[in-house]
Image (cartoon, rainbow, N blue to C red; front, side, top):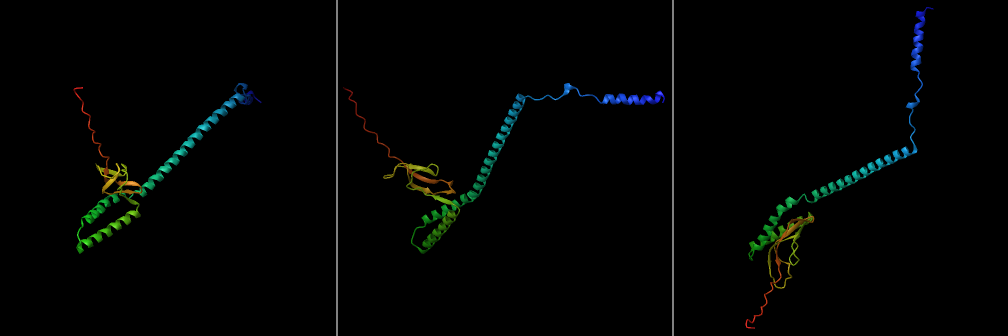
Length: 203
């Protein structure tokens, strides 16, 4: 063979020699020590605890949101009639005032009174069905949350701060105030000033 033909074989050998190289011992992976493993474990446990705390807080927030939403829905059902009920109250007031004004013994007056009383009873029945309750606090202690004091007056035999007259009844819907009762409240009698002893200027 000629030298020209042998040249490629030598080139192949040199290429193969360069490809196959022994690994450098300097690049070998570092074996972690026990302390490093313990530190990594502690960090992982801390991260896991933080994630657990976040998950617990998120769950609690979801439960609170669920309860609030449920309460809002319940309130919406309970108090959906609030506006409608408030519009009905003046109608009932007018019937009551008309009944009070209907005096006399004529047949027309008697029929009017009977019709008004029947209508008022029907209103009361409907109110009871939809949890609308009347506030008629005569003789009861004054309650600022349910009553509106129109005036205070000394009333003989009445305990101070009690309701002695109801000008207009109040109403609640499912325990929530629709309208306060307008009332007259008894007040304690004013103490009369005692006679001051005269001073003897000559003494």
